[in-house]
Amino acid sequence: MLRDVRFSLGGRNAGIAALLFVAGIAAAFGFSLLGLGAEASFLLFVLGVLIVSIETDSGVWGIILGVLYLLVYDYFFMVPHLALPILNRNDAITLVIFAIVALITGALANRMKQQVEIAEHNALVLRRLNKISAGLIDSTSAEDACACSASALTQILGREVGMYLGRPAEDAAALECFEQGYQTGAGMPEYPGCTVRYLPLSAKSHVYGVVAVDCSEGGLDASCRTFLDSVISQTVVAIERNELEEHARADELKIERERFKTTLLRSVSHDLRTPLAGIQGNAEFLAANADQVSPADRDALLSSMASDARWLAEMIDNLLGMTRVQDEDVPLDFQPEVVDDVIGDAVARVMPYRGEHEIAVEPPQDVETVPMDGKLIRQVLVNLIDNAIKHSAPNSRIRVSAERAGDDMVFRVADDDGGIAPDMLEKIFGRFVSEDAEPGRKGGIGLGLSICKAIVEAHDGSIVARNNREGGATFEFTLPMHRAEEEDAHGGR
Image (cartoon, rainbow, N blue to C red; front, side):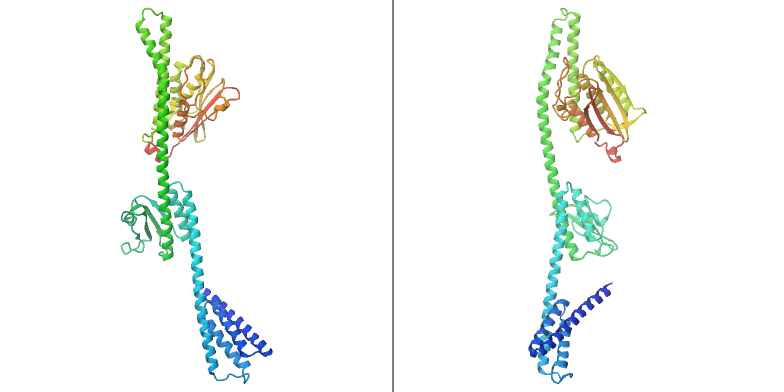
């Protein structure tokens, strides 16, 4: 293939020289007809030598063309015609001038071509670096930055390139590169037969990982190494930027958690006073007037105390649930749970307090198990059923159901009374958002539904609320039937 390219290039140069030769001789013939002297023809010949030296990037073709010009001009136009006189001093000087012009022009043309090639190469490298930089700017993590750079390098260098964060597991060359911070692998005498070159992914004295470059089909030349070093530097900058952003997000999350705790304490401290004061007052009154209180009044006071105590217990359960979901250091306990049992336990907890409400249970047709933190999902169902009891008429019907939908299990809690105000639908799962409870029922601090949302999302599920066409509202949440093996192995959230 290289021989064909050289042959094609030589044919092009010969064609240019032949064209300029014919044009120069024809112009010299025209000058002779016009009565112009040899000086005009020689100037034209110098121009031809100049052009052929530029176009062929070589002074050799200029010298050849100059000799041909001189021989043909002497043969046809110098006296005696159609004869080659012995080379004289004028011809020698002319040949020297042609040679000097050809060599100088060829050298200048070669230098200009090299400079153009260098400029084009630099422009191409700059475009590639800008494209990689744009991808790195859009990356949101160190892993994304490494994947972006590795993909671009593989495409540009035409060989497999990988970027790996952290300490390598097995390869000795990669491990040495990571620990010592210098290049190892292919091309190094310490690793004969190795076909992968390892470079440290590092900044200053900190090594983030290693870069593996496939050298099975040849090593890296100087331009490839320079480009690779530039991309590695940009990748390290992107990794450091992403780490700073992650730290900033973590700090913002801590601030938000502290703000939430402060707000929660204010709300809880305010809402705890009323039921505690009621329990204390009723207990003290009964203790001081036990003999004077009628059975009916005593039962009413005890019922009020029990209601306040239950309200406090629900609040504490919700606060503990919210704390557990928000604490990343405490993983959720995912275990296969039978859906019928989870629903039955939740309904059993609220049955003593349902009043005149009718609670109907519709379990799945088959026995289904779902990986979940059973205690938290039971709390979700209890909160949703209790919410339906609080915000519906005393004689309304509440339906608790579950059914499988593909790879998900769908739980629903629906009532047939009232519904949700349209302006509350979008914000009903927000913190400290609550509707007015039914008369005679104690309201909450607006955490029950927000806790439901947090627990469901910690299970990689979703929860929605909507109004029913026939009246009432439905709360529906979905849990995946299966979890990834690595999450199950760590009990992760």
